[in-house]
Length: 320
Image (cartoon, rainbow, N blue to C red; front, side):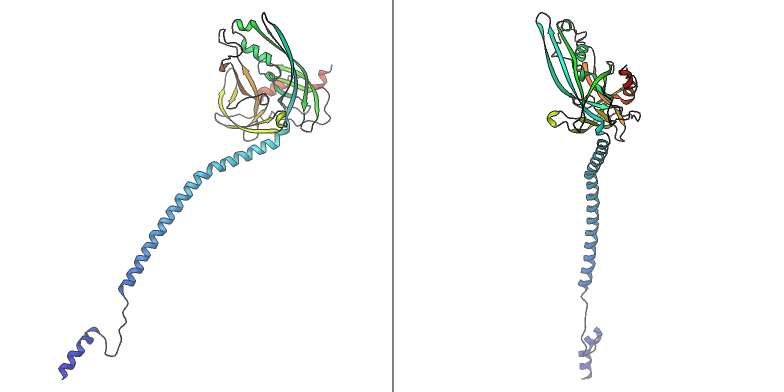
């Protein structure tokens, strides 16, 4: 009987469990599952971090031009706010005469607005000469063009000149200096101004490099209420000879000539004028077939304008 009892108890003894006790076991699968879960979380975290890095990199590439554009706009608005009142509308009355050999001629009178930049508080204002005397530019381009030069003639006489301020004031003015080489005309109010005008200080001149951006200020025409305007232009060429000037990638019109251009630090780069050369067509070009290289709009540096302005007679000298 003792052997029988021992044989029945052996399996429990081998298992290390006394009779009457309950064995509690922890499934090994549970521990393995937790280790696996930890691995999945770790891999997921690495993937999320990598995604965030890629997202931040792409976002920086996309937002960088926007930030640069905002910075450019801020600088442009600051220049506009500081210098806009130095840009004025000049109203001209032009009397033009056209004649063709063997056909007689005709004349007409027109009124047009051009842009000027005040360079002295007394009201001394610089314009593009081409805007005040289009006949001169025409004759320059036609010179050397063969028979067409002698067949067609154009003359322009400048009548009334008025400086129009933004408060509605009209200041009768007159031309006091012309510089055909630089395409500059200077006008001054006929009477002493009661209040000094806002003027652009040309002594703080700037220089530009190729592909630099510049801010151009302008006065729009009558159709746009003669509103102040600003635009961003880019320097496409720099010409060193026969004198320094800049070529901007801009389409010109009568309200752009005479407008000032500024570098982004707010200093004046120069004034927009027209550069015209003699025709090389050798005849046959005619008035409606100018070669594109005969004329171009340029930015004349501030230093050249300042030197020319010093040659303008003082207000007291004009009345003597």
